[in-house]
Length: 296
Image (cartoon, rainbow, N blue to C red; front, side):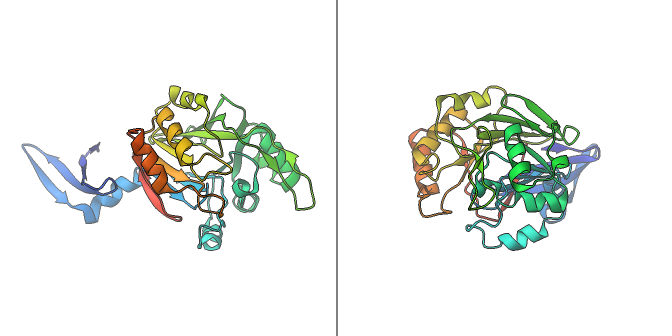
């Protein structure tokens, strides 16, 4: 239930975990008069919540309640998303681009989007330097105000978003072209993103399971965990389920699977492993291009 000066916005949760019914009622003592049902006022609640879009692989868009637009690892034209080129062309406003590490399937369309929209790059300092040196990301959009290191918090967009870099076990290097060697891009990271008046989101990046992943939730209750499950280059479903149990988020979205044949982990296997461990987190399996609302 959300409070407004004129009345109450009521959310009714159905048996389906993703289905909600909304109504708005006006305070009019001694009675409460129903004003409208879900068709007219349901939009009010969605406007007040963060929106999360999955583009497939590890790519996401977050729209905050204030209307700011954040992208994470924006390989929007990845093979899992058949409308990638169309979506890429439609991105007119992007405020921040967050990167977990320097591999091409995560850097993706970052430079094109950054040059077109003026988006600031949010990453570790070493990765930002590699992005500028090797790929030509605009230097004025990747300065100290949006780059940092592990453990530090970045307050961005006048406090609308806070980002903390946390460890991930993987690699990180930026390649200019097929004929050039990789350029060192520092250590890979996961990202803890806290939205003002919204949720705290943990994107694992590409990682193995490691015991200290449990420490990610020491300073924040993780509302939604975006966890790699594809195996081969990252955790598979078994270790990903262990990671979710360790972090204990409210909900979890599997990512980084099915893009290539070697990424054999599946949401079905992941769900079975979660059940074996009696994990309480709600599993939300998204489709490429799907958008969901996130409650704080």
